[in-house]
Image (cartoon, rainbow, N blue to C red; front, side, top):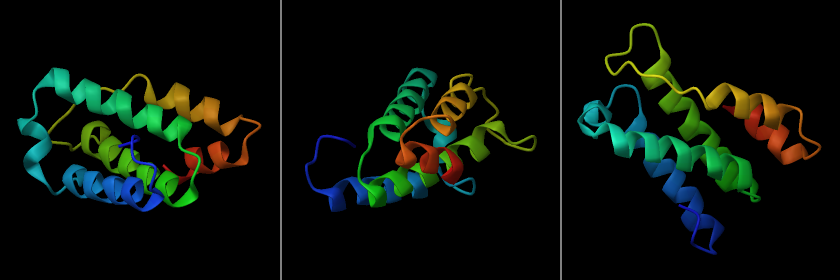
Length: 106
């Protein structure tokens, strides 16, 4: 997700992840719990570190889709994401405008 130097590639990766994590896509329930945690951690790391706006917005949407998928009361793949809210609060208070924007886009 973050290794490419091309902003377009990173942005496209976020788009594809968002489609995979869309609440209507049942694939997430087939992912083993360890890999689910890895994905959640990686998405939050990207949200915090991405500097290019198109990629940042793409991953913000991705984090939002995943949050809906696992935290919504009627979610079929109920789960927890204890790291999400603290990170969003941290980003919302950041001196960095892009980080504040990311927190609000989720």
